[in-house]
Length: 203
Image 1: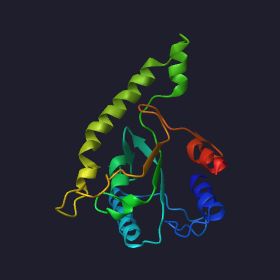
Image 2: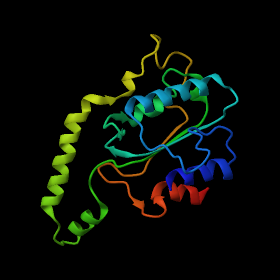
Image 3: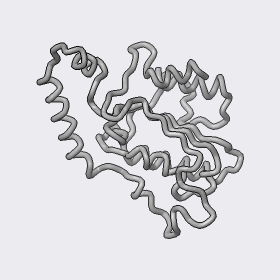
Image 4: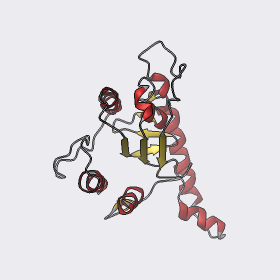
């Protein structure tokens, strides 16, 4: 439901002119994105945004698996969240002038609210299950860290990223996470992401 919810907000409610990917119908929604495809797509849209002075705002919503500070792609690659939003500003000083909102609906760890609540209440929990989750997460971190696309990989020019008389690369930036550090993001089986569904309701 996440994509239909976002399309409703920006196409039907807010009447945005440019929505990418377009998703003209909800029956053919693309679910598989490799690391290279995501980076290439975002970089292309960053160039288009910077070149078109008609655009006065940017909203990016990413719903995926994730680990702390990073988005996981379909080929098990990683992209840091900082890299995602700085693709639009690091080499594009003009784009820093417009408001940019990035909403990440993905986990920031493997802890769950119910498990923490049970510990606080002094109730028994499945410690072996929790230890296994932590081991799996640590192994994934060690294996995939080398494949993470970071903001330092966004190199196109030799001039200073934050030069004289230019705003910070994070000027007018809003960064929203769907989970607290160390915790899982959650969803409803019918409504989808609690974060994106709640956002849709507020809009």
